[in-house]
Image (cartoon, rainbow, N blue to C red):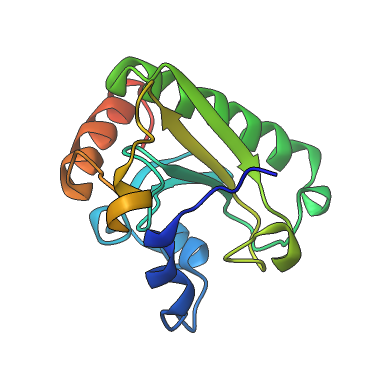
Length: 163
């Protein structure tokens, strides 16, 4: 069995969780930068992950507070998938990843850190982005500041004509 180590995530795991849902707060706020929101569609939101596995790690979530995708109506589900598609296009054009990890963790046992509001993780990947640092130094190297990634992606999404 191979193990995947992500020791930098322990800060998130052990940190106190907010009282309010981060996706609902971000969806209702007009202050995009406060919540690292890079895009909003009619029914969905895209925001940077504050505890990223890699540069450009974003979460795509429905605006409506549901804990699983089967609770979404067809319009919301279609909007979510179209927003996911647009997100991957913007990430591909802006950050030039060589691949992606895309996934939904539903329920705590499946790895959901925020289990009451379903969301899709989109993690850009590059050859060599996993190196010895997490194993030897208990350090994850994220080569770009979150604020710089935010500005880059927010501007790229604006170029698509979205909000």
